[in-house]
Image (cartoon, rainbow, N blue to C red; front, side, top):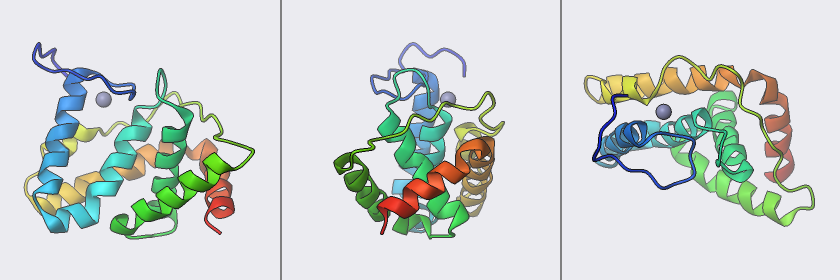
Length: 157
Ligand SMILES: [Zn+2]
């Protein structure tokens, strides 16, 4: 993204203020449309978080959002139903002795980004772009798919 002096970001995602501002724009669109929100919002959050692993991004967050992609893309859970499961997984892992595994980001994290979603033409295209982006990001993390599946099944009993 071109450098924007007004953009700012003080969270822990491994992102730039400019990229973060595109993400918040996309989130804004999703909060303004109930259908898009239900079909896409959780996928957007999970794909964005996982694509911005590394640096100060804590293991807990990367683990949670990988679990979200697993539930939506491998188990076919509707995105709107993912958040409650993630909450349960978070509580269980944090209370367990094993704690959060560290997931090293893959060298490539998918070519698509949140920018494609920001440029979507209408609600249907928005949902389609989110899905394509999330699937690409998830595929880039293929080396950890099994570990994530085990983590989810153990902590979602
Ligand atoms: Zn970015």
